[in-house]
Length: 111
Length: 112
Image 1: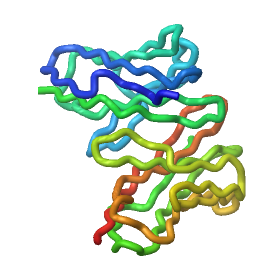
Image 2: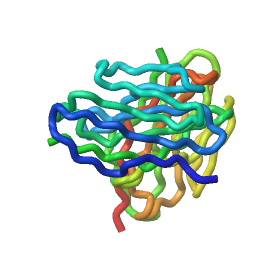
Image 3: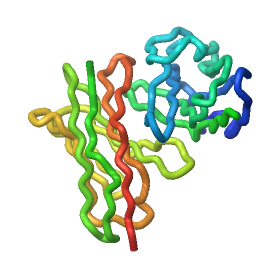
Image 4: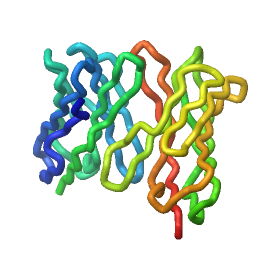
């Protein structure tokens, strides 16, 4: 089975812009989670979707949003980018045994 | 709420040394426990897992035993290699598609 894929792998944006990141889970997995990873804050949970519904949510401002499509693919959107949004954004899909599998991440740089 | 506590890093070991990375957790019920490894510039990879008390997860020479009585899931390896240099994360999942909780990660550096 193919693993979790994320696109794009690298992205450079300027402050005030918005960005959309994409994640395709492992085939058959219905849950997709998003995490932000920075050197200072570590790994922080953004949100999780299951069958197109947001199941869990972290403590991020409303500028961070997501959605999941009927084929389980998910997108994450960040509006009005700030310098502090520069990070590695990781997506993970979860199987029936509750195990998460991560993608390679999208490295976002905000200038 | 649930929490995972890992030992502070970085941990620096010589090649072939014995490795222990401590992980303790707080959770109600019987969560599943995981270790993930992250190499530079990559995502997290599942290293091993255990789903019930006294289970031992193992993979690539790494082992961890689910200890309910001490709420611990310490990662061990008998002889580390330079290629094991990475960041290791301990995590727990309560089940039922509830939020997964991660530790802060422990950086391991193995020197030749």
